[in-house]
Image (cartoon, rainbow, N blue to C red):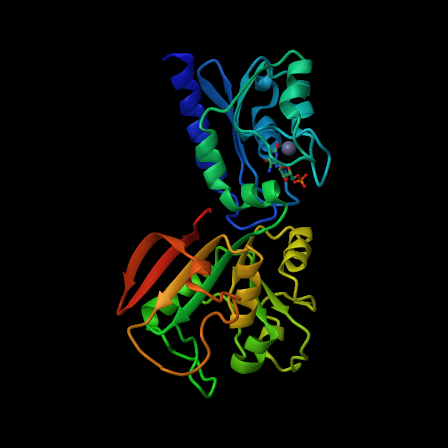
Length: 336
Ligand code: AOF
Ligand code: ZN
């Protein structure tokens, strides 16, 4: 086997190991394989913020066999001391001779491991399967690069774009399959964000009700100045809840980023959605459309400040899925 396909084989194994870590976490999922000669002598993965890094786990398993070995990691080994680390030094100390990694660490606080390794005369090569490794941590990568969480705006509406009836009632616009799908997708978010208006109107629980619940429920975030009653469902102890009084989407995301939330689901209502859309802070839209009409009542979004057809906001239609009698559209903003 030539070096490249050999490297690819072990990196693919490292990618497989990485998937054992939590999909939703402050930290990326990382895998590592230590190979001596042709044999795997240590495997490791990162099991979430606060636990050992993948390299440390793999080196621990390899013990003395790491001396002269090659380490394969899905992310550039870190060069910093935070909750743990630094992995680059641990690799040097273990006597690893060569390090192959996929994705360069985009985190300014942690990166630089490749340079540390080279300075210690370890042979380093990075970039192979980098796209695959980044895709495994797409939201983490986005958040670290943009210094804010990735934002998905989700709404359910009738054909005429209404998310509630004239009297404010909004339950059961879509069918059971679409609602189950919402819970499945929610499980992948770090936070579910709503405005105080939505809490007052609908009293949503904002919990994930799926057969395979995530390790940690998404943080519930209530944005706005209005008082919400202590009896509101979002304030129960089913999941953590954060109340933010700021209306500025940039500030909201800044605060959530500081809490290491990597992916935000914006769940309503129309004013909050408009604020994020106007600020250009919606990265993805998941729209559930029911084959129904209301004719009156609040729309999914209100007040985009578009006065004329020239100002129309268009999206790229990425995916269309039928869920029972409803449609789920996956949309992305078109880059102008
Ligand atoms: C690695 N191996 O397995 C992971 C890395 O707070 P800490 O100490 O857990 O550090 C988190 C940062 O370290 C994270 O943002 C990312 O840059 C890097 N993650 N690095 O060498 C690992 N999980
Ligand atoms: Zn590390």
